[in-house]
Length: 346
Ligand code: 2NL
Image (cartoon, rainbow, N blue to C red; front, top):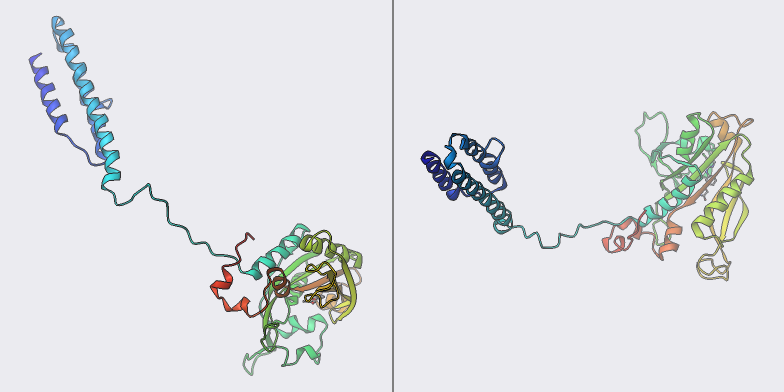
């Protein structure tokens, strides 16, 4: 019994003088004293050596000791959880730093909106090279060697050296990507091709030497002009509202026959006549047509079996109308005061 009391006294001294600065030390304390193989359990086991007449007294002393160790453990726990806040430089009560969020470019917003409408109709998205050979940009599209659009004045040619086997250029439309899709030979094809294109034009508030297009292509057996019209009706109603009116005007493109241009009733004045629609009540938004049989043939598709429609639209002009931008050069100057105004999902 005397031994036991001495041991407890020594243990109490050890416990009293113990201090901890972190959670790990507190946990070590718990394991050493209060764990299943800890010293408190161990000393409890010595009860069996105490003579019967002293068991009651010893039991009380041991219980007290156990409570003493437990109280110390609680105290250590509280102390270390406080020290985290007291000794750290971090004030956890302060609000966090704002995460700077960029904004989407207005051209991207417009392009994504166009893409997502056609995706809902089952069109896939394809992208292709901006530096292209003249076959994919012109010849395949039924624009033979002396076609006026091939003129140096309209097209940027790339100097690929005197030994270059073909002429290289900056694509003048995204049709090159559609030709590449057609040549893959997997039919039917339903694809839209967004991207940047280049024309050799003087830069002004209204035109630039590079801009963006979205072209679309649908090829299968029995595709008709009625399919073209319904697809584009759906598109403009999603894009400009269910009340918008549409008209087709006959037109000419070398790569489609027949060809048309599509106007929508002016979404600024509703058709009454304003500066945007030049008092006509109509705004031209895209060109389209049935793919010329020569174009199908050139890309390895049998025009006797397959027909298709195609369309193309610019991205800059609708974006300028939608966001009230009066100078096309703003799109490529990357002035943050301009860019940060476009905060929107998409
Ligand atoms: C416009 C008119 C158009 C096409 C683009 C096309 C592509 C292939 C075959 C046939 Cl591979 N056509 N594209 C057709 C008609 C019009 O664009 O005003 N774009 C801004």
